[in-house]
Image 1: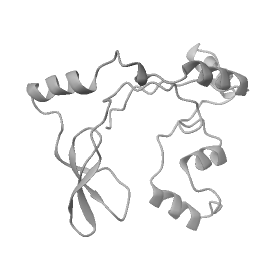
Image 2: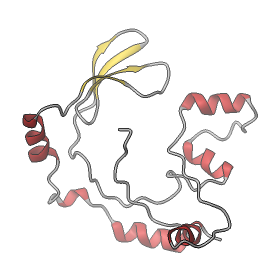
Image 3: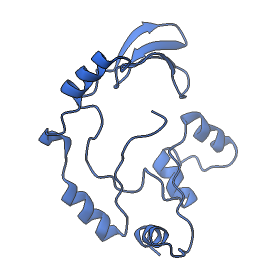
Length: 161
């Protein structure tokens, strides 16, 4: 059963050969630890892990090239170097503290969107859905997915940031 057939069965309340499993990715440190526990050393990326484990992960399934979030995003920049940590501005305009030594969820210091005035600026400058450059070659992605037996996904953001 192809991945697309599997997803179609699930979404039509039918029984697939196995339930699709989509993880949202793995911290670099997790993959390194898995190497110590027997994961082959050539498995290095999220996509490698998903293929190795037989998952239908987000890194494998083609994604429609549609930017539905802030566009353009804010400039990523380092505001302060604190040794093992940095204070940065991320692509959403948030001010965060991140580790330079590991990957994890950042510690948010200030959000880029806190007031009605912030919202008005976001809406005007970064949420213009009439911009044609927000949409890439959708037809190409759909055709490639169709010919490979894959479903197509649309990324609509995350509850986690």
